[in-house]
Length: 129
Image 1 (spheres, rainbow, N blue to C red):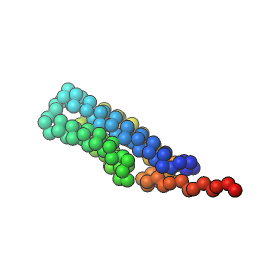
Image 2: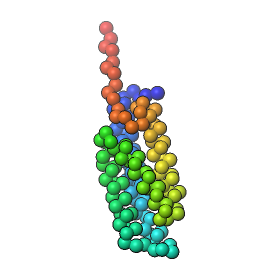
Image 3: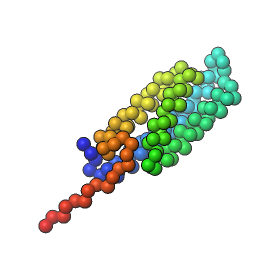
Image 4: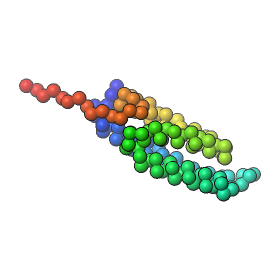
């Protein structure tokens, strides 16, 4: 099944991907609070790592309209999942975000014909008469 207007569907799905990435960036900002209360504590390197990851996630939301946007967002799911090494709760939170991202890729595949491909213009309608 493909969308009647793949270009419009592609824009909508890119907007959804951008929204997910912004939410992921915000979620990463909550990790330092959990780390600060754990045994090893919050070091400068851990804080810098999390702030950079959060910034990259938010900035990658801005490139979702480009051809490689979905590739970048998909690649960023790995470091997001690895934040679970810093705080155990992030395994659960990042896992949920990963499942949402995979669902988005599945919807892209159903509506656009490809999980990572750019939407193509719909075929011209035959004129009556």
